[in-house]
Image (cartoon, rainbow, N blue to C red; front, side, top):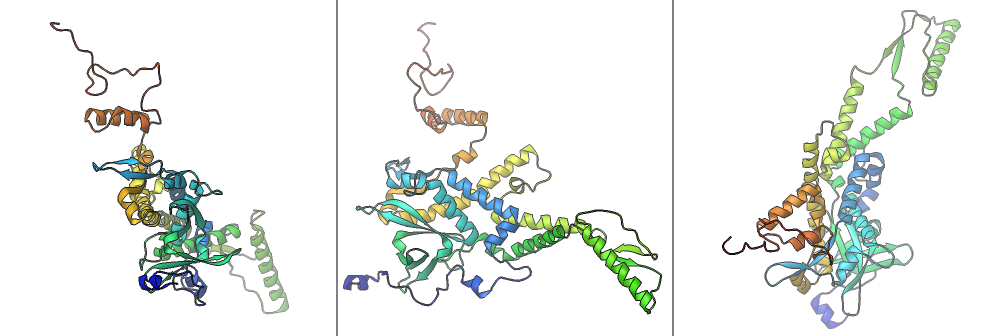
Length: 415
């Protein structure tokens, strides 16, 4: 590293230190923190045991990956236009690199952010310093280190290439909410107590299913078993027969024939099963709330009407997808655009597809916008996937009382 680099305090690709960085994503799990009876163990366990967590993660990741991620060019009049000629436009919407579609890369990054709090991608540049590709970096293989200059350096533990050091300028680091501004914390980790309780309830339900839902029961009798060999043998025989019979009830349900005046008495308190079901449903609802996903979207609402479903669909966009999209946009603008580029361009999701509604509602909204001089008919055609002008030989009929569009026929003088 030369004198200028030392003077500027720029980071270098030094060999990785032997010590593990404090921000290593699996350091806390390695030390055993966060584990216990109701403690959160790992994102993988949450996904495999809690269907709601898996559905919320898939819903958010696929919804955001399917949206257009548009590169806009700022105009002198304060407006903006889509910069389709910008190299990032193709990288973010068509192909992230020669091996991975843009949809797959963006879905993986959002999944990593939702499960581990951090998502990483490596940028590839051309000779002019423009980003031409983004390569996915598995979050479990990346460690983050902060240099004395305040800048970040990333350590990739690649099973093929070994340890690779990446600088901040060539790494896109997406984060969820952070405690230190450097390393993101996932939604599951922020609410690890609620997740741990839901996992414990799921484990208890799994245990009951493995037992075949055979109830815990005791048998009582007024008869006394003698202490002699005959009495003890009778007691052991009856106990063995009852144990074998209850064990086999998982596969072969049959009535119990009791002898010696035995009476069956369940050990569970009255209504405990119903209370457990209600508590488990409340735990699953907490998981949906952690992600900000409305209950009906993940199939937990029991009293949803058409009106409430429509409102919850709008709430999904407003309270869940939009904040997550803004989080991703802010980091992509910072990581993929230079300071000069941010003055000219902006990367932003197009959420209009999620708020389009039915065709009748859209046409009514277009008509209102055109009459209010906010929209142009050509723009509305483009949003509907049509060309701005009709094909040759086709005409658009314009009502005589229309305020905009083609001029209405003028009445002859003196009419």
